[in-house]
Length: 564
Image 1 (cartoon, rainbow, N blue to C red):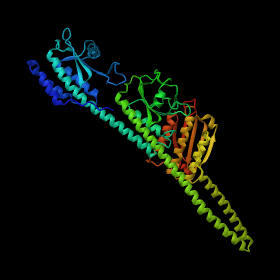
Image 2 (image 1 turned 90 degrees about the horizontal axis):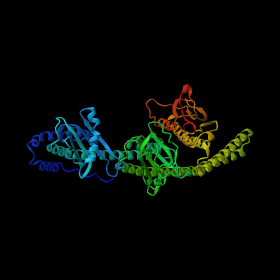
Image 3 (image 1 turned 180 degrees about the horizontal axis):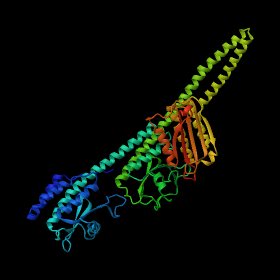
Image 4 (image 1 turned 60 degrees about the horizontal axis):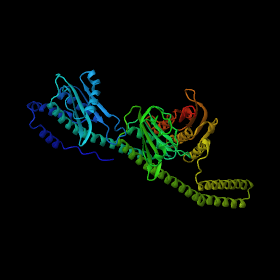
């Protein structure tokens, strides 16, 4: 992003102002203390609008005007440049005065700036500049004493406008710095979340928590109504909404921006897309909710690879995205894309470590355990041949048979360990079954699993993906925190929400220690966010142990066609 133009040196400005005041009237000289006091009062503020409000009020009081207004132009390069004013600040002694301020700006556009006095000297306009850039116009009208604006008034306002430009310049630099720091801190926070593993284990191509983290952060940083992450659609060539962050359900989750949309090839080519009205802009090639106004889409690209896109939108009638905001959003998206690629590489390394560990365990089982079992069986067979007691020989024979069966089971386990982990089975049942089987390894026992209703037929792909991720989260919580000895998993496709809509319900119940008071509940919060994104809910209650000991997590979402 281009660096902001340096503000003029206040000493130079003061010297120039002094030279301009030499030889002026006694009236103007007598009013200099008021001018200096007004200039001191300007100072700076938390934002440009606050400073402008102070300027327009100070100017009106300095020359005794009943009405004053400042019209701020769009910055060069902004999408709305040439389409009216970016901001309007007014001052008036009465409500009627304030309502008439818009006429002042219209008069400035008609007569030009700076203005000569009107027919009765009742109107005055001067430009507001930051360095060489004219960013707005200051207009005043209606002297309180009923007289005309004088040449002295114009000189005072021009000097005040010069000081106002300095104040605005400082405020802009400070605002741009704060804004840039916020975006940088946001990128760092997202990177840490993705690389720490706290954002889910399928941040790029799947439905882990990674997209949700990114969507929420881009919405916050852009001061927007909604944040969206889009990932490539499987086989369709379009972009599919993988995560949405908004105060209210938007209905966008799972929708597809089709390949025929003109915006898609631009995003996949690494180009940003700016849209003033999503409901009517042909770039989308599809209808969009009418609740959103100015929108910005930037590609998630790392090198030549485009992972998807970020989109954010303000409400209807919201201000357009500035050139600075567009540049910061593009930089944020590039940093997020790098973090996603690094997170993907990190998971690949972890997967490789698991495979290597499986291979080592298989070798140890074969070289140590099986050989020792063989040796023990041979010793028992030798003892059997030497024993004369039929009862002892029968017991030894049974022990040898048990050892043989154990050796066969160990060999089966060795074979399974030497195979690559299976691909995700087709259908929701298969994916749920795989997650439950995988959980048996760290848990040390096999959770029970029950399906109710036509799970594969009723549950859509988006809801199914979230359900599997919720199941993984619940089983992980049980393993890490619950110290459970028994876990029951139920997937019910015949459930109903509280409002009567058909739903799928996942229940994971254990007999562990339960949820401690005051303990961390980030896992439960993740489950709730997943359900709420689909229009469902998540809760927890008593578990399977005696007296309700343990935890039962219930996660439910409406079925497709019913709000999912």
